[in-house]
Length: 357
Image (tube, rainbow, N blue to C red; front, side):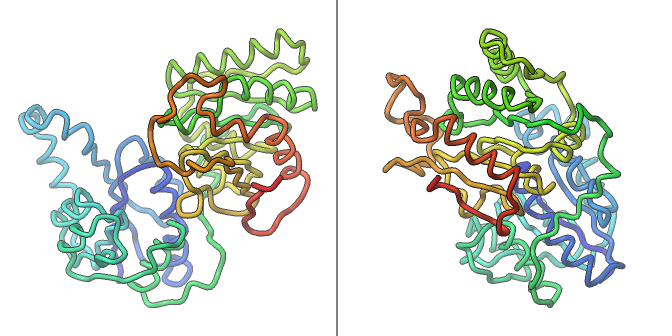
């Protein structure tokens, strides 16, 4: 094979999970050229890998919302033309959804994907000419690595290497003693309480670390300002910095330089894992075993609650509790600080779970 097309369009975590498989293949077959179809919001990520040649941005989310306007403007025609521009030796749908399987049909070349027992959406497997069986109940990183290994016929016997070329990142720095709080996420059930972030910031700042607070929307910006104001009131000394709005490459550059990270279940947490930065990730409604931050120096703190993981976007117990979602009451700031301070001082095994701290 000389030219391969990868289809992994979203989300950020899913795109990052595919990078180690690309590194595996490139180490064995360095002459293969990879192209990648991805949503525009995550297009920076494939470009960080040295083996990716062309990134095709496919704004399917937007095009589905305004299909008639997209058709009139010619956007659909431009996208299909870009996909069909090259004939590929292999087209790999690493997403395993109907939308990605349909996109694969527009490309020229044999299509590979998971079989119906391995894929996320069994209907998608009906559209693949070549189907691959892998163990479904394993972490997403390893699942995609196994898919590529069976297609290219080699054994997976190394630890994952995300293969991110740091020289391709935007160079930005706030010093070499930073701790970053990745406090923004989607589901309300994934959010660690704002009061806990404030208390943790005060603790981390009092230990001499510079806390950095990135944000991506107005709600996250307000939370970041609240954390800083709390530390001002507590006279913490080294006050947290509310960062300006940054692009993904700039945030990744800061993550790569950080001493430590605290993250909720968010796409940026997967970047921290890819950069091998000591990270404590907090899980309530979701389960890290299959899709959690994966790599060296990654610590998973899971709530102690019978309802977890509920996999629900909204807490079914309501908002009448002092701590919301109430399951996070089992992960107070002191427990998170204990895990973070340990992570930044001690080199752990490849992947650990500190839920018993």
